[in-house]
Image (cartoon, rainbow, N blue to C red):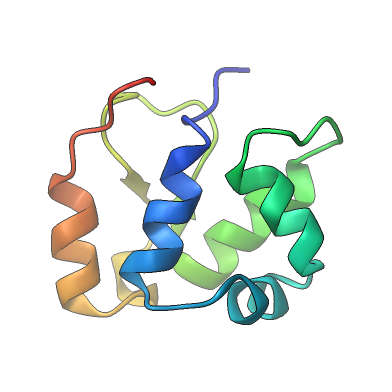
Length: 94
């Protein structure tokens, strides 16, 4: 399964003006777990995390049709300015 570059998670969090603690609470995971996702160190099963990102923010981090864009399945889950910014963002692998 191809996934987004791990830096996208931090970009999403910063765009929402959330700390790691705040976002991890919203997702139902520990701050340390979120940190491993943001830094690309997570080795565990990510299905729960992906499902929570969809439920909480309407963003699908699994294999996108266009790996250079953030895929929204429900754009109403984030503020409009955040949606507008993230939906036009060009994702490049680093």
